[in-house]
Amino acid sequence: MRRDATFRSVLKAVSREAGWEILRAVAEGPTRFTHLERSTRVSPRTLSERLKELTELGLIERVAYPEVPPRVEYTLTETGRVVIEVLGELERILGAFEERL
Image 1 (cartoon, rainbow, N blue to C red):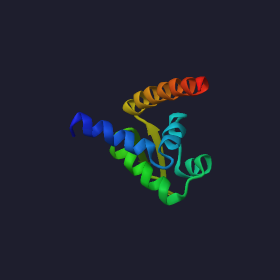
Image 2: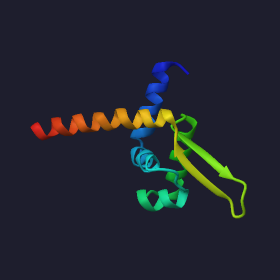
Image 3: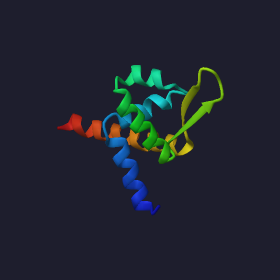
């Protein structure tokens, strides 16, 4: 994927409904679907779509454990950590700008 296409894809995914909230929740450490569902208050369908999208972009890693019942955990990748840092800084800067208005 070209650099500008990747950039746009990441921004699009993070700016979609609950994208940023999910990314930040996963940044707290390995987490499961039900925990994300409770902590973000996102519908299961939307949560599933965002997790799939963020995983395909390489921001989140999905680990399925061969257990009964099945257990799946989501963790932030190194790329995801960088995106969190950059967008967190942007959020801080824009918050400071907003206070001046």
